[in-house]
Length: 317
Image 1 (cartoon, rainbow, N blue to C red):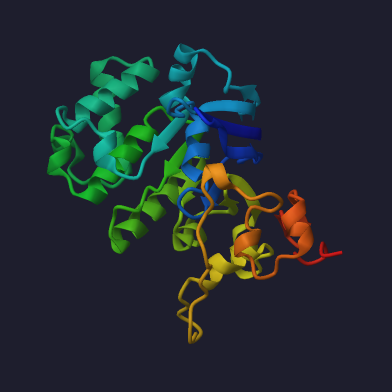
Image 2: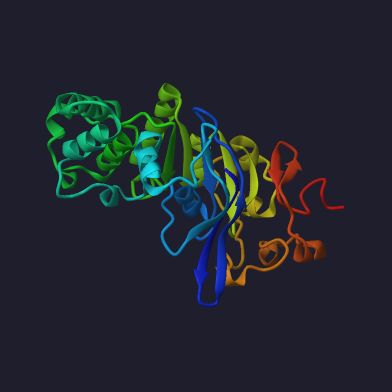
């Protein structure tokens, strides 16, 4: 992704929701994208697969898959890529599954759309996929409807749909949020195994740093439509450079050290029509200097990560 921007035209002018986002995800790698609600995480994922809801438009930049540009493709060409080369797992599996059809029918339809298999071969492949994602008695349960599965099992079915055609990339948008903690852990382990076994790249969108720490190789922290820090997950979690990332990490309870009080970031994410000049985080930042109010910092190396901050170590001069 190179300098991707997403705009929303309104009667009062154009609002920019995603500002020149750039990153890459390698084969078999999980990139976590984290931030508060409204940071632009899900919109970035939607832009990758060409599913930005109108009136939103991709206003600039490029999206490339395996070296081929895909953001400017006609609708039908993009539809063929969706499912075949890019899979998607969304927050609520009930919104991804048609309640009127059995899960087998939905899997077979997806498989036959993207792979040259007949009905019997597609059904056999569907049963294999259900077994791979951990659904027991798959040959019997393939003819059940979505309401006959628990939330965790439905999410496994959605993951089976996402990997049905062995895509190169999966966009996972809050895939564990609607699940209890023990089921979350199972889904996380399943996604990690799929990456390892299939070499699939994953863009994992979440606000849960625990999920990021357990799953991701690298993490991008977003604020007000921009990436403010990106780097290896262990370094961003344990040695954050940007004050916003420091605040996010400080708000997480620790099981190894006592804290009298958790860190609280005062204020709220700015509205799209009220994003401040300079660094968008400066009104909430206790370390802000005058330069933060005047100039917007770009991502630069700070230790082992890259951060967009004037006061991060080595950039305060």
